[in-house]
Image (cartoon, rainbow, N blue to C red; front, side, top):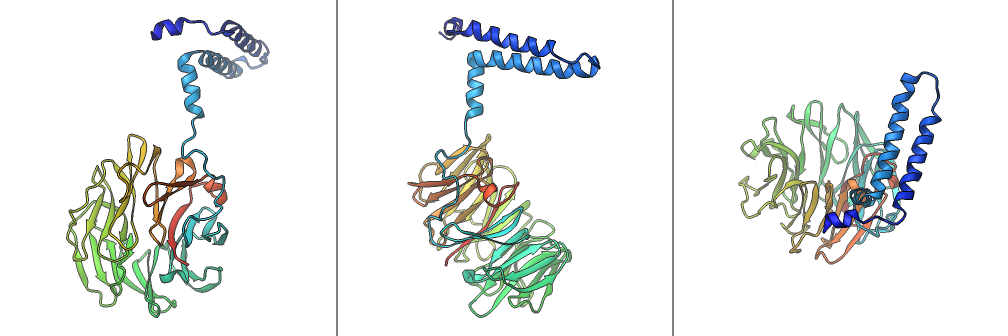
Length: 373
C-alpha cells in the first residue's frame, strides 16, 4: 500500500515545487560576479539547501524528518519556571554563575562564584569551594571562615549538633578541618576523591584510593576499617541516610553500581537495571534506591515503589536527589533543560523548564543537596 500512497499527488504539490525552483534559480542568478571561485561554493550550498528543503517538505520521509525536528525532548506542559518545590526543604545548586540556595517557595539566592558546595548537618551552614579557596558560610551568604588551598574539590560536611568536620580534597590529598575552620590537616596523601561521610558513625569517611579501591577510614584515629578490591573507576559515593549501605557508582558496562555493607562486604541483594547507570540516590530513612540508566540513547528512571519506568525519554538523567521526607525525587534532565519532580509512588510528575537560564548558566546546573528546613 505504501508505494500506491506515495504515487498520490498532493494538492498543490506541483505549484509548490515550481515556486521553490523559482526561488533557487533567482538566488543563483543574483549572485555577485566578482571572485567567482570563492563565491560559487556558498551560492551552490544555498541552492542545494533550498532545493533539499523544498523536496523534503513535499515528500513523506521529508515530512517525517521535519516532524521529528519539531519534537520537544522532555515532559510536555512543563512549568516555564520553578515557582515552588513540591516538598518542604531547600535545594543547594551549582551553576556557571556560582552556588545558589533555592527556598521552598522557589526564591533563589546566589551565594557567590563557587563551583562546588555541600550542606552542613541540619542545613545551618554551607561549605563551598573554588579553585584556591574553601569557605564556610550561612545560607544568607555571610562568610564564617575561609582556607586558602590549591585545587579544592569535593567539600563534604558532617557531624552532630555540637561537633562537626569538613573533608575536602586539594593538591596534597584528602584533608579534614573542624567545622569552625580550625585544625586543618592532611588525612590521606595524594588521593583525589570522591568522598562520602558515613552518617551516624562518628567521623568515618569513605573514599577511593589511587588503585580504585573503596576505603573506609576513621578520621579521628587514622585507622582504616576496611578496603575493597579494585572496583574500576568510581565516579561517586553515597551512603544511605542510616549508614547501612554505601553505593559506589562506576564507569563500566551493565553493572555500574557496587553496594557495600558497613563492614565492606559486597551487598548482593540489589539487581542493577539493565543499561549504563547515570545516577543513583537512596531514599531517606531506607535502603531503597532510585536508579537512572541510559539504554540506546534513552533515559529510564527506576524507583523503589514503582513497578514500571517512572520516567523515560531521549537523553540522559544526570543527577537524582530525594526530598528530605522521601516523598519526591528530583531528576536532572540536561538534554531537555528540565528538572522533573516525581512523586515516590510514581503517580504524579511536576516538570520545570528553562533551568539553565534561571541559574544564569550555559552548562546544566548541578544539584548539590536537598535538606529540611
